[in-house]
Length: 382
Image 1 (cartoon, rainbow, N blue to C red):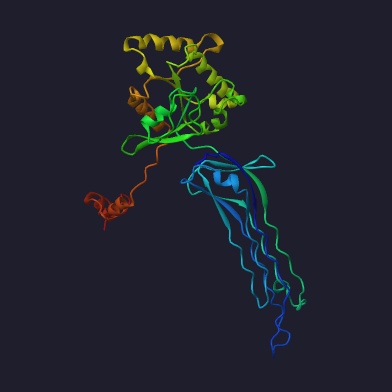
Image 2: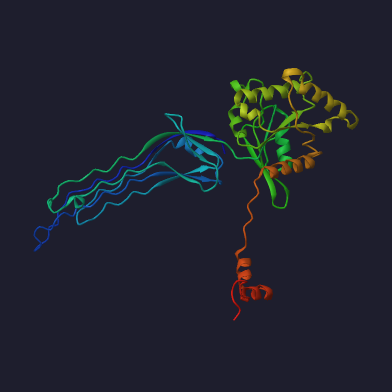
């Protein structure tokens, strides 16, 4: 299925039905009085976040969503029927913007969240609402109000705990396939990944986190070069970034340290807050380096990557792994899980009501009962 993370739609709620002017006309009932009913409410347009959907492809082709209008009121005190609402199912992580003003309207960040995109019009009033002692035959009524109309821009930002970034062929797809249930396409040419992939990593019973893999970045991505700039938004919700570096690139003229610094520069151009996220270095493909040469290669890379002076880059944590052989992956995953658990807020302890009931039913100790029964010091003893 084609991955679509942006769409433009138009939603139109239904108009309210018009109230009517009607009078009761039956045999042997002169001056029956007004009996015109109200119009029905127009249908509204809602959106609901559904975790079973992972793309906006449905809204790329279905751009207009119209709700029906409410029915017109009738005589004999009959109200018009309200129109049915429309509910649009959207993936969790969808952000809804107003197309005209650019205002952020809604952020569907959890499953089952329901928001109203366009409110249906209210039904008009029939002449039964205008009768009084001085106006016994009212001919007034009101028309239904118009339903809201909006042009919306939908933007999908996937929800993941950890985001993978790096140059093309850095081994991101190999790593996510090795440690999670994701099965992305893996090949020996650049830009194999064409859309984000999500994988669930399990590190123990009831311990897991979600990893997002986006297409590789190249220098100039913030200005539109390559493919990764289209998907950088998917890293904005992550809590930790893993910066994968290929220590043994195919191109002999490639410089891993220079390319790694260039990616950080592109992140800062795109969104400074994204560049300031916690970011750990993951040095991949160490299986291609003889064990006795690995410390020297890693030390040379880190020295060149950090730099000096004003352009020096901080390095929080460094992992040397092999996504192909899974060497070093287990230790890295445990560190990631510990870090994510430290960010989670502890749930407040809730008292079990059963213990309160038991405590209330247990009689007080004898000494306490005796103290209650004993007279106060200032009371005379009979």
